Amino acid sequence: MIEDHAPEKHINSFRFALKGLLHAFTTERNFRLQTILGTIAIVLAHFLSFDRFEWIVLLLTIGMILAAEIANTILETLVDLTTPNLHPKARIAKDLSAAAVLIIAFFALIIGLLLFIPHLQNLFS
Image: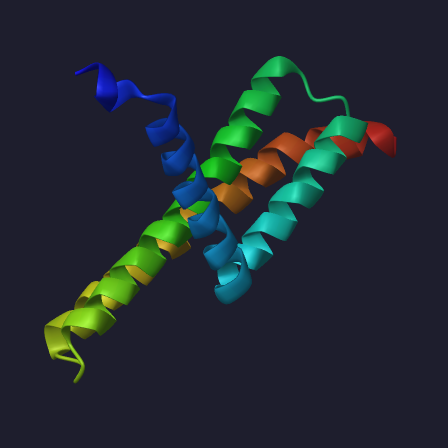
């Protein structure tokens, strides 16, 4: 039982996760775009002096969209692996996964506007 919690296993798990992030960043255009936009939002939030609650909302939103992009990539990869000739139901699964990311991205945009507009209005007034 102690072996299950060996530091090496945790380190290896972390390495695998980092490899996954690197793969997503280097191969997935949307993940790369969302990462860049998230980084810009973090820098802007710093300069606008977001309070603790605003930081929590912003970071959760960025994390949610990045995780959704990775989940979409996982599903698309598995569908491609299991169905060399795209079955109509496989197409539906891929479309639904993309739609889920679109919904999250839409609401992330709304959250971003709600967070940033008041600060920008104060800055320019």
